[in-house]
Length: 201
Image (cartoon, rainbow, N blue to C red; front, top):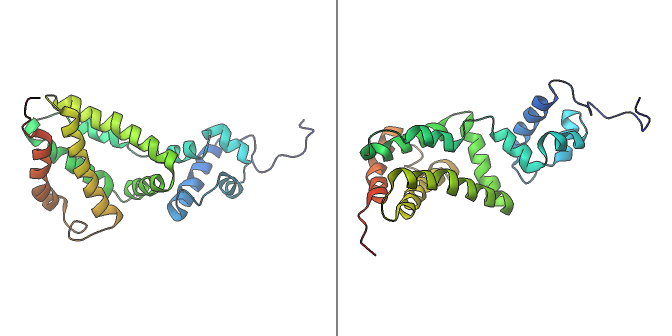
């Protein structure tokens, strides 16, 4: 018997405790943003001790990552788009990006990740590492050739611009274009960045 006093809520954790914490955290992060939400406030709403959240997730960033981890990860989406005709790689990647960010359930969580990274320097660093290693490096390895990483980075920068204008500041006409319209207008520039001719050094 625990002689130190009664534990609050479900300190030891019932079978569904982890999922309940994730449900509360997901709702709070989406409603209030990353910076405003505390581990203690999530614990209070979930009816558990904050130490139990630390036990499950390690930290606020770990909890945030677990919430986002319920979705298909962007690196996995990219990996599925890479195989195929190199000439149509920009179209495949752009369509995959649009499908992921336009998803009514997953899109808001990705926007939350982006805005949270703007508020938190450490989270921004982690996001840069993931983008650099799992997205830019993968594209560079896939296309190969001279300056492959520079070309992959330029390609990624254009995709980032699409994300920012369509989903963050919601700027028309980009925000209101259909995926087909976006592919028609943006694919030539993406292709030029990815497959531009390089001069010998």
